[in-house]
Length: 264
Image (cartoon, rainbow, N blue to C red; front, side):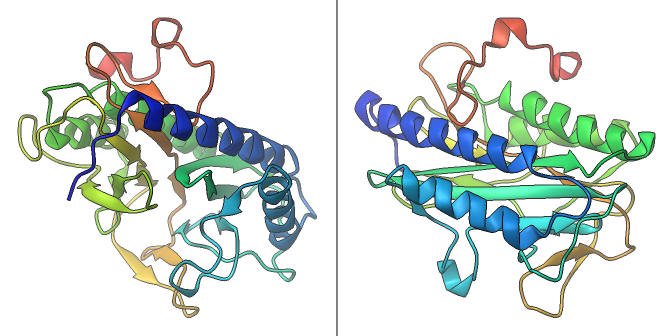
């Protein structure tokens, strides 16, 4: 069942989103060659708990950490480890969620580890543009297909593959609520959107083919051909009129943002 939130509930999600933004920004600042992914996970969990929130990933279906750390060809669900030491030239996707006063926030970004090749930077930037293109379509009266089509258009026009086996999702009291939010689709198709819906839109983009395989640990998802992959996600709220509010990006103003504008 799709849950529609009122203004008070969205305000709660806004507070959760603002905290998660601070957590991910702090973690991203610590990403550099020689750092272990386990140390990033410890930082995320400590910040979340210090602010009276709960890490929503930790223990979810048995997941053993508060943060997902996915390096290079790992698309999502990379488990932090003391043995995983970041190397310059890699890219790292950071995905985190938390619960504050009973309300969820979920967000992800991909960051460089030191200096990275131009092709890798272009992948990261295109994945972010794909998110904003999709989010611009998250309008009262539009459809999920409008979001997916916009994401797909940005990614594929750059020559990239859109991961199809994993999706965004509704979010609220629970981390994963209905509906699934695909990163591909046809305009005008799928679930009709309405004000008060809250969604996690999260393009996962491969530098080449979109097919994936599950890693040996039962969690990590890897590109089948070993190509680099980037991930970018925010929790958004659909408004009565106009563009959505990005709950995990405090201070964002659409009129100042040109991300994805060329996909309209």
